[in-house]
Structures are given as structure tokens and as C-alpha cells.
Image 1 (spheres, rainbow, N blue to C red):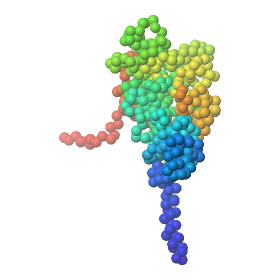
Image 2 (image 1 turned 90 degrees about the vertical axis):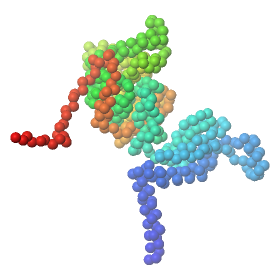
Image 3 (image 1 turned 180 degrees about the vertical axis):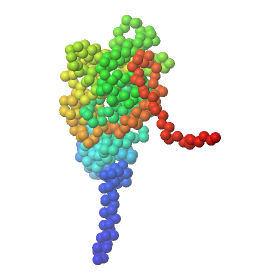
Image 4 (image 1 turned 90 degrees about the horizontal axis):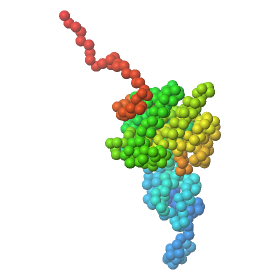
Length: 460
């Protein structure tokens, strides 16, 4: 009886602690990491750093001077030297540590062993980021941050114009959509993949900035119409799009004329040879940036009869001109669709080549993923094909530099997004070229049922 009581006294608290840790890890991974995971992983890292680096082939022979000094002082065999590590800095999602590379090493050597380091130190992921020549930073993520997305407090976007924090990367940093760096982007995804959520974050982020927003939504405006109070122009079918695109091209040409006049460029100089842009103009003369959102771009390519082919070719040509020349004029494209391949018709491949940013959500087949990522980051195609339907909003993002990563957007309801656009309706800039396409916003009805004034009865 005494042994049973002693076992319960010792085993009860241990079982309670183990069960509590398992519950925290499953339901509250951030709390589990702060209380249990981080101390364990930090102990593994500090205790096995040298041996793990040696097993991963990340050590180098010591210098001759160091070898002679060690041999003279201790008379023992000189071991290979791992990269010198800095202080271990804990974060809410993991840990960070800087390494000074040994002579002859490069950041790619550390990145190639990231998977081995992850298993050795018991963390969810290890990511390598060069800091300066000879120094890299290891970002250790303790749990799957994409399962329950929480944006960090510091997103890195600052107050920069045309910079919008859209989603969370798998390394627990914010993914910022920067139109100044990547002017045009292609967003692909199947139905219910989270493509519309990504679009909502972009629009609501830009709505608070002095930017003109235009939209082409050939699904009768079901995606973009809720944001009408903040839109400067909206086309809800291919006929209206055929009128809006020439207006944007005309606006682009007028901006090129403004650049010529300001910088003394000859009027006969072709637009393609003008290397300057609107950002070189004085702030008082600089035209407002324009971001054009195209939802379901395939609808602009599809034609029902031979009569519509001429209009289709004109629209595609105008989109290509905007993609080629719009950046210098402050006009940017965000093209969305479920599939965007050469089978859509003439000009599809040329337009896609101008869209340097790529975001691929869950797609229905591998060729669709190749259309988005195959020509810039072939190794990312497999990652895009493994996105599960149970994780809407998860996507693979890449650019022309060849780099890619997984991201996931935070859930944002359509009502909240529409409310934010309505609150910033006063920021709609005055662009005469887009006034004919300004969507009509119905007036809100005032509900007096909740009035705080009590009626007073009439007296004789």
C-alpha cells in the first residue's frame, strides 16, 4: 500500500505535467514553445553544436597557428573547427543565432544541411539568411506557424508607399508585397484555395494609402464590387474592360509625356527608351500610382464567336503594354486566375512573362503549378502540388530571383474588408481618365430603430 501511495505521489504530477505539455503542444503551440520546447531545443543546440556541425560536414581544419598553439598547450589532437556562433536569441516562435563562417564556407553549405540541423536540434524548421559577407543567421522555428496564422507585430513594411504585409512566411516573418520592387504579379489558385483572401488583404492594405485602385472582374463584379467605395474604376464584364483598358493606356502615355516635359527628353523618343519613371518627379507633380486588379483573367481571353476575337486581341495587347511600360508610369498589375497557359490564346505567354511576381495557391493539376512557378523556380512546383485542401490560404510565392517560400494569409471576412474600404472612401484620388468608370455606391439606409431619444407625447 505504501509503494502504491508513493507511486501516485510521484507519478501523478509527472503524468499531469506530461499531459499538460501535450495539450499545450496541440492546442497552444506558442505557449508550449515558450515553456517547454525552447529550453529543450536550446539545451540540445548548445550541448551538441560542435558534434552536429562535424556530422554535417560544416567543420574545417584549424589554422596552422591554432593547431601549433593547441598542441603545445594540451598535447592533444587538434579537432576540426565549426563556424563560430554568436548569442542565442529566443523569439516567440523560435530562436535566432548568427554564425561566422569558417574560411572556405559559403551560406549555401549551411542551407544544404538545414534539414539535418532541424532533426538534430528538435525544431520545426531551420532557415538560413545571409547577413553580410562571412556571417549568416539561422532562424529556428519551433512549431508550424502556418497552422494558426498570427502576423508578427513588426512586419517590415513600415510606412512605405505601395508596401503591404499580406501573409506570414513559414520562417515566421511577414511576406510584404512591394510594388516598387516587383511591379506586376500573377496569382493562381483553384476554387476555395484562398486566392480571394489574398486579394482582400492586398486591397484593404492599399485602401489606406494614397493610391488609385482599379478592377476588372468579369464575374459580374462578385469579387470586387464589395470594395466599390474605394475603387476609382470597375469593369464587371469584358465589354466594360474593353473600354477601361484603353483609358489606362492613355493615362500611361500622358504620364510618359509628363516625364519627357520635366526632364527635357525629345518628344520623338520611344517610350521603351525612357529609363526614368514618375518617382523621379517632384512630389507636387508626381501622379498618383494606379494598381489594376484583374480577377479571372481567362475571361478576357475567352471568346464566344469570331466577332469577339478582334476585341479580345485588343484587350490582350493593351494588358501587355501596361505590363511592359506601366511600371515607369506608376501603373501596376495584379493578375489573378485559376489557370493561365498558352491555350488561352495569342498573347497569354507574353503577358505571363511580364509578371515577375508569382503566387501559386492550391491548383487542380501539376501543369497549372508549372505555369505559375516552372519558369522562375522549378523546384517550387512540387511544393505547390502538395498543398492540402484543408489549408486554404496556403500558397507558394516566388520571384525571378529563383527564391521561393510558403506563405499563408490570415482569415479576413468579406464584411470586414468591405468596411475598411468604405472607411477609406475619402482617399479615392481625382483621376479624370477614370471618372467614367467609377462604380456607383448605393446610399446606406439609416436605421432609426435604435434611437436613444424617447418620444414625448403631445399634451393639450
